[in-house]
Length: 257
Image (cartoon, rainbow, N blue to C red; front, side):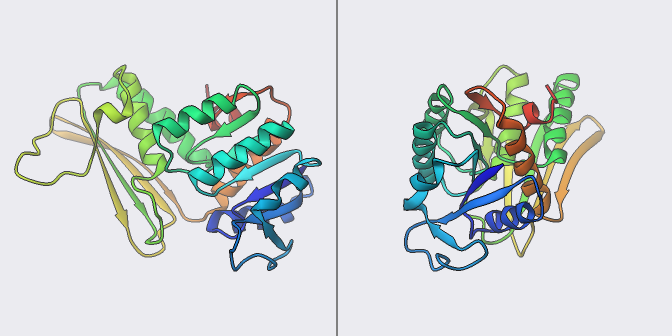
């Protein structure tokens, strides 16, 4: 499978490139970074400018994108033009940008997930099941990441809040409270508190607390290596090559639905 890796100099991009190089199922035909990046011309394969994306897509079987929301939407336009499936691991999208992704999915196959690891996607299912069974318990979410992460909360934490909200037939943004401060912060019954810690080199920890009378249940996923996310992205790339246009997530890839 011939793939293009967008955001190849980033933490995730480097990990994906390294894993793909060791997998005989993949050939990296392009590793791309934003125009002006100091990484251009370095690495193996040598990193090219993202402005050259078009010339690689004529022979590409798939794109793996870990960039930023604006770059991802731009890359989706190119993916649509050449009908190339795309794996999106970028986080931090606004609701309007998510709607744009949904519109693109009418023309191109997309796997869009804030977290590509098997364990986290099992966590989504466990949280959904727990939220159904103990719907009267308070739910709070805590996420920890390295001190260079730009967006907060993490896409995974936001997705966890959405999972809980969906059980209550609501939207994540309607019940999520991102941190609390002040003298008028009394918790309401249905809200979900989402809290972010940024420190050191933490790869990614997520804990969902279900708290009821006299007891507390904690569902936790801790990532010790980015390899788990990169392996999931490559697994998604293998899967999507045979799919029709549409918007998919890792639950589809892992057959968890």
